[in-house]
Length: 74
Image (tube, rainbow, N blue to C red; front, side, top):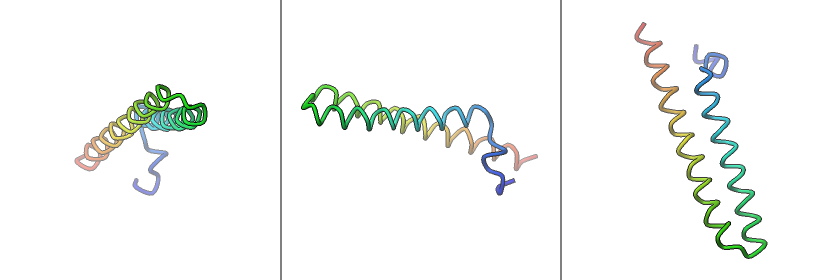
């Protein structure tokens, strides 16, 4: 089971992981744009987007951990 990590992952986990990666990527792009255009508001807002992506990533880890624990108990 552990060798097929992505194949055995649920749709919820995959959605959370891709959403987190997308938000982090958008946040990085906003940071670059905000800093190159000297737009401090955009640069600070991008930190929130990156933070939300990191929170979603942690939630995905919790969801996956619960699924693995449930599977191992059976």
